[in-house]
Length: 400
Ligand SMILES: *Cc1c(COP(=O)(O)O)cnc(C)c1O
Image (cartoon, rainbow, N blue to C red; front, top):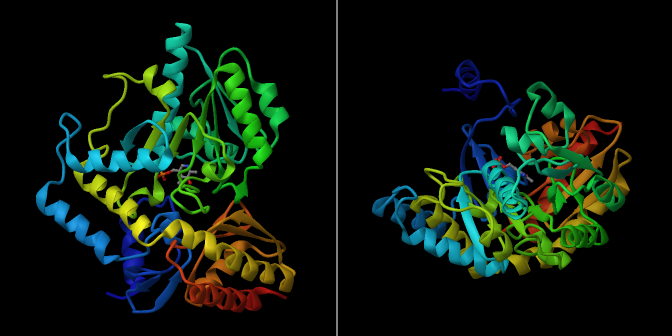
């Protein structure tokens, strides 16, 4: 079948909730993907910050195949060894205390919100608590996660959503302070905003939110779904700020490509929130996905991916800054580690992304005008050069 036919047939059957790029991807190896015509693409999208180990890592795949042969699923009514191992590793690298595995990032958000609500309920003996979220945030598409997503366009058709949510300005501590009442149970924010346009938190802001949460016994939730798992040069971006949340959410790169997320909490919240019967998930943390999580952590250590990200970040930033200097339509670079955004002005960012696709480079957008680069963490210096050349070619083709 021709690529065009496959796209047409897909559109015939698959609900059109995504405007997909005109390519059918078939196979991947390392930082490269191949379409059904055999054309090669350098992957600086990584399945939206998921494939930290790149594609088809043989050790990762062996672990998955072994687990498949042994046991796929048993439900959460029984213990299983991969969950024990994955749990131990999440707790070891995060320095937090308890984890609940979910099937997605959105579900991790749901769990985190419920933990915060239950914590306040246990303390105050009543419900009706409020949550403060950030403008331009993104936390997912379910009703709960959408309620704390600071983008009116995403929310409006589905109102009324979960009540009791107030929005504050990201990196604007005063506006957060103004929203606090004696009913506030949680403040939720991304440590680095992703979908909203790649905005890292200011250190002072994050410390200020931590202080407010301590003063008012509010649960601080950091969403690390995109910025976590080494992408920003630490296992979790908050570790680089020296600010620890009470609850964190994780997903995307956590399973290296299998659908898995997690919410992780400290002892204070764990002791006084979700109890048997309060939360559950049939699949959540099943042996198959947990074998993946466990192997992902092993390979992060084996390849020393955190130091690799730290070592190559200055070079990636340097090459991107060069683009900001050379092109009038590229006005700013923002980001942390391997989570970078270029602000494109005067041209639709989609035009640049489509040219890049034609030139064999996969990049994506964020917000309305940001070109987002979230490559696999295994990329090399040479691949950064290759990306830079392809991006420059693409900009040359659209720049007037
Ligand atoms: C992707 C993302 C989510 C949602 O995760 P899903 O796995 O798509 O449900 C939530 N928060 C952030 C910051 C994300 O980047």
